[in-house]
Length: 269
Length: 251
Image 1 (cartoon, helix red, strand yellow):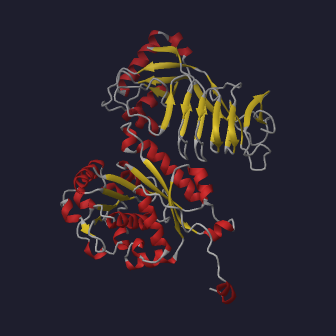
Image 2 (tube, rainbow over the protein chains, first blue to last red):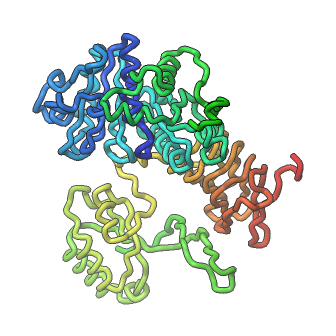
Image 3 (cartoon, rainbow over the protein chains, first blue to last red):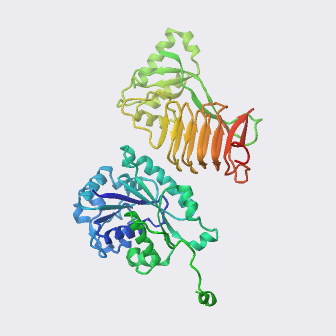
């Protein structure tokens, strides 16, 4: 049976789409048949991050309105064969998503895939509610700053009250915290909240920490999910996240400030 | 046709008398007796006729009801019937009655009431009404919440105490007619004794609340407060709100 995972945050710009692309790619690289769905109707971005923007013919709204079959809208990822993308519409708005339509798509995808990753839009309105409604697990992407933490808290409350599992009185959605854009040096300097600070506020299990890095920007500009950027700490951190999600025990990395070498200090880096 | 009847308790928000501290706002409960007018037809003209008949039949009773606040009971009106609420309100005001709210209103009628800023009073349960989302309300006794209460969530222990085992985060609101116990940091808003019980108290293992209130007296704790982050209890004596250590100063 497929697991449905929503990547959400409440706040915008924290790294939901980057995480959705990297996380879904990571699952696919490990041999799981995975589909990633963009729920951000009107602000289509996932296709860019995955580098498939020129192959979008039909989208999720077409499928909901019966203008295309699901198989026609699914795009196979060029980086890994087990990954498919269901893009969203750039010309419609969030009201184009209907409860029944999304439910029907989920049912159909469940037959074919091991994991369904839902990339949520920012906010707590219709699009975000649709993305989280069917979730079995939630990855709450949070930056180490107070406004992001408060918005994550809000979305956790909504998941606990308004998801399908909550409405049906089933076992609650499994929550995971993913800290992104983490800069250990700035944490040490007191400019950023630490991992402990965020956990103390949100009180959900930590899935991983993604360090702040320029390779994320490079990756999305090139349309390559960050997990494919070999040799970067971001790719390694996302690999750890996927491994932990699948039940492996991996120690946290990239959470301490880098020691600056003697020559680097002398000549600047 | 208009019969006086005991109304449910209503919570009134009102600015306090001038001699209280400047900027203070007192929120307290009050019980009022209101007349209930059961509407027999959705038609405003018919209501006007009936009121006229009533007035001629019993002028003394009509005089007694002059400028009386009335609650409109809609239990006899089918949910799908077109309700000319604006005209009905005009007829009532024309008959020197002051409509202050509705009861037994169907969801569609409640929506209509919202447009005229009319509150829905208790007794609004009709079959197939939508459940109130994202808030936990219970009838009586103690309400125990084991999970964290997060920003945007609201929990009300009606008629009893509230016990929270998890954290109450900033942006959350917890209310109880009785005491509130939080065995974790209290960072949101906590209001005990909301129905007016001044003996209600708030207990928490770390006070970092945005607001604490007992029976309408409130305070917004600041970081420089001696009890900030400490195990605390909040209670009132002589209309004064006190924040004190829980179990001695060095626990």
